[in-house]
Length: 284
Length: 355
Image (tube, rainbow over all chains, first blue to last red; front, top):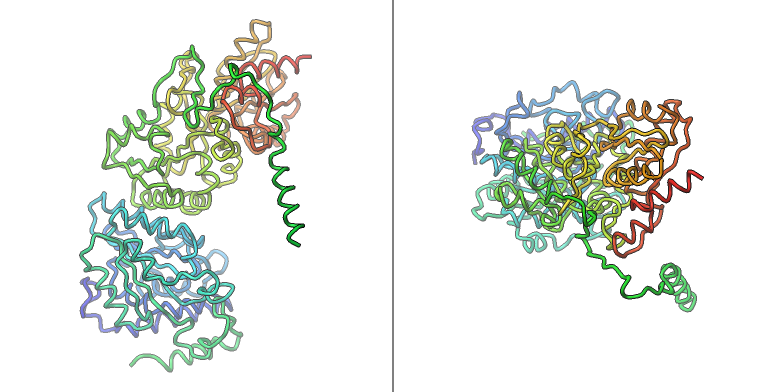
């Protein structure tokens, strides 16, 4: 299926290849720091590939172009993942990847609008993004803009009460220009999110709040793409959410199986190994 | 185990209640009523202006179509209903949800709008702090947070008495804090805070708001402290409704031959340090900071720190402020007498310091 946007049509680079490159950028940044939220970045790479190379409308040379679709990173610690996508999208230059998390870098470990081109909001204090998006959607409607607002959030973030204030508000205001993406990796700092403060049954919750809900395998690019299409073309005057079940560290099997993946420990000699494993699995 | 827990629970309960038990007997004819959220701070013979904030915002909105109004179920109690009636399409009722109120205001500001956001000061400062801090202040967004019931302006009790709002907000980078004295100042402040690039927290007096400052030919300038009257014996440094009160006290005390100056500091952050240091050192007068706020973390401590930092701490320094306590419920005039904010109480404090 073709992208709804001219800018993505006819590209000879496939979405799996984009996801591979995003993962590769993330691993290289992780190597610079010797740490990072690499598990999340690898897990969410397929969603970002679909977002930045299929679904979103933007101009790489003008990240603040008024008619762009807004992509908000509510989960600030996923910045490493978003930088990887912004580099692949040509919004950030590749060489800056080596500055990740260092002094004077435009790529701090937690995503902030004040630092980085292409970063729409300051995330990190979880539970902020969806509410900010409600305001952006109201503002865009006031401006009679056709731009969409995407909010990438996480399952752990669903524990924040403010997320549900925003969810109720989005439905109340009929925000059909809002697409929330929940990265459901079932991991948070102290363990599996479903054992910390379970948000299940999550599809029922969002539906009860008045949202158009889909739940897909977030590492199945075709499924994510189809869900984004449906979210966009859905006729209901209601906000949309795509819950994406993902696997932390996806694409690097020896990391996927580590018990603690929220802030996955990677030994100095393992970065190269991880890159090698990733390269071996590069899509043909 | 369960017996110990029961005893502890009873002990905790009696500790909480001890302050009110037994009740002070008061003749029913003396009892004033609380008036909940709409208690007026205006005395009976004071001229007032109705809903100065709502009317000023409505007037400004005619010139600036980027202005929108947002509230968390408190438009009527923050005078925003005037704007809502005039510009229904530019008014956003966000419901009783202060966190999304502040976040959504940030989103609106990101899209180029200038939201004026209203709720009560307690909810903005205590409940929505993180959202104002990260979503609004960190990004230096043009959100103007205008909050009713600052300090002790309701007798409803601690749930609605924002006695520490300035202490909370002073620590937030980028946030400007404005505490206007009367209706005239609110009317003048609205367009100026709208022009200011960045977030502003303004303490609101709502309903029938006294008009006082036009009598003194005063003009509000954002960021500026101004001498309203001069005097030899004491210098009041004040903000908000306490400026109105110290002006009244100054008149009373003049009858007794006591001459007081009044330096009004409506912009609490950033402070006009130059004017404050100049006036607080001039004439060697005792400096009395009067504020409708806790003695902790408000204008008093801000002025004291400024004077210390500038090496200008030579004079006697006193604070007229609320105690570091959860305050009683009751009728507002009673509470203002009790906690030292009424004109009568201010005069009493000054007389005791004269001895």
